[in-house]
Length: 319
Image 1 (cartoon, rainbow, N blue to C red):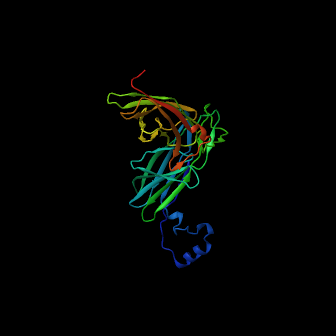
Image 2 (cartoon, rainbow, N blue to C red):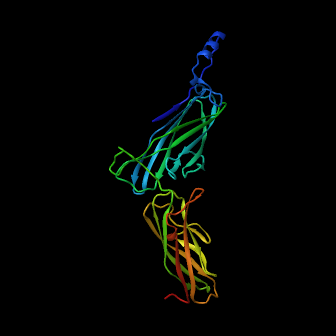
Image 3 (cartoon, rainbow, N blue to C red):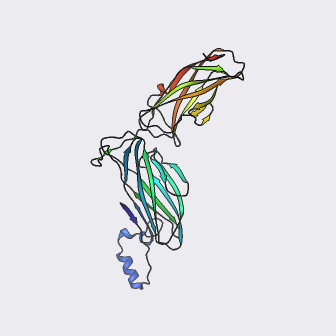
């Protein structure tokens, strides 16, 4: 467990001689920090446990216990900021207030600031911070660095106490010994395949059909969603995707959320043409696959397989 403590200093009445002697003999380490307040005058204690990520059927999951003790007077506003040990790993903090995400300059890891109810003097509060890493589980232990928690109490003397925590991935054999450094991908390795589409005339005279798609994701680069952009011949439009997902035509999210390395998903892009379209060959369309994470557009290791073409045919009736 990692504990950072700051204690309230009860001021006494010192004689002039004592005060001069104290100033003369005070070591350099006692010099006031930038905010002019000595650490001993503080009154917040923060304890953070070690993050042990356990192997599951979808990567690793684990939690960090966080304890905040406040010995100030009255109440103080409380905010907790979590720095991810692995990009995209933060899952939840059990607070009743929303969290705000901020990028860290030059990297994909994020800082997540969460509000909390004001804390009273003498109160000790416990939280749980949940994490998950979508990567292939290994028969050896791994470790990651850089995880941290900053707790800010806002009262007459605002204070931020920051402490790091160790992160270790348990092996599939149950071991935590001799961990190897975990290295996360920073580029995606995704691909899409598409089949031909047949549009069939509907009772209102319009045409509707489906483009069969298979999306594959290799590697463990962090990502929020994958998106498909459809490029279609004049008059042909995107109508949705099955299974259902968010679409802002001509864009549709890939259904099912984030991917595990090596995961494939089959889906169908719904496309249509208006009444009055002549049956026959309508030309060729394509879909382009892209990935994003937070405020980053991620590059792919092989952009050539991020686009797939398909033919489109319109029929008066189903064959």
